[in-house]
Length: 201
Image (tube, rainbow, N blue to C red; front, side, top):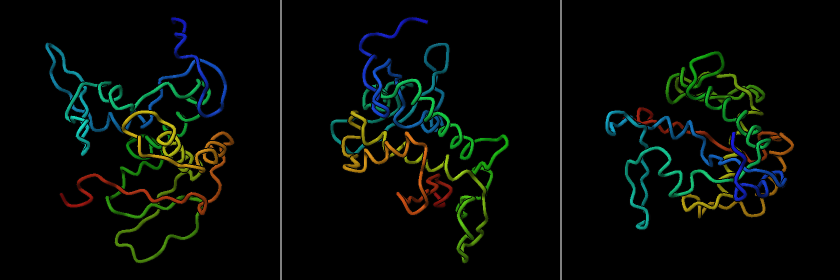
């Protein structure tokens, strides 16, 4: 393994340590890879992703893997190895929940449009057609979502230029460092399934 370049040794945006920084995904790679298509380039097929934008300076379209990551900043040198590993735990859990086929909650195994209730929270509200419970780890899932908000806020890429948590950026950083998501009333959020089937398209 080659030594890290001098340009990649800097201050970790989360813990503040001076160390080699990983080329971190601001949006997890499994989000990008889930919508990639294999397109023939010469004798081999290559993964291509698509980016659409209403901004005139971004000419969207389908490009080979790593093009959009570089052009609009979906990846950047952001986290040290320890913090990258911390986030990867949350990402692995979320990836299994959404897309996994192995043991675990795997929301993909359920019907579309049903309500999902995290295990530590009480009884699900009634009246939802086809509602059922899906047990999953509240702590890991909320830390995953908080990490997305925080990364988008601190990122320098043009894709995230309007994302700002303002004074809450430091508070989220403290929660992520302590691995404490607090309860469901602190930074509440809603997860919506945006697959086309959800809307009958």
